[in-house]
Image 1 (cartoon, rainbow, N blue to C red):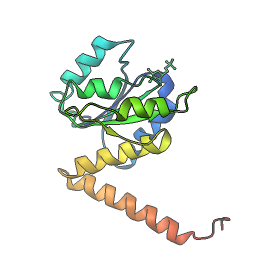
Image 2 (cartoon, rainbow, N blue to C red):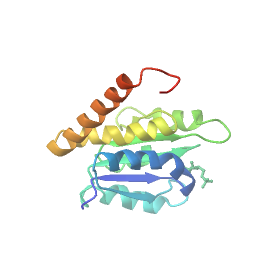
Image 3 (cartoon, rainbow, N blue to C red):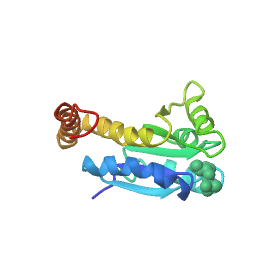
Length: 163
Ligand code: RP5
């Protein structure tokens, strides 16, 4: 299947966070490609990836990075595809550095910034699905089903202590 989402991250060490975006995309039945692309260690690859993504059929890019997290912003500078940035929780500053690096874009180049860590990665996958759902009835149904199941599961299990 043609990947619709490009799931990129600055390092292999980001995968334990970014796999939650992958899990959501899989739940929604959305084809994606996953790749390490580093703003600082592989800058030429970053430019090539961002410039060629649209012509390859990618429609949304999810970019996760930690620390001096320049990947989402630099990718957004090279493509008009929507870029969703996931701040990875860093060891030294708990991801506040990543969050501010990704969120504080100058006006005129947009990155949609998600929460730090697992929740942000999960929601990046979900938000990518919601963007793609504008053009796909199948993906819209998958998003709506996911949300309805989530609601029903909570309503069916109101006791916080378990069964
Ligand atoms: C960033 O530096 C990556 O996105 C990662 O979150 C962080 C640390 O990378 P490693 O030193 O673990 O490869 O570029």
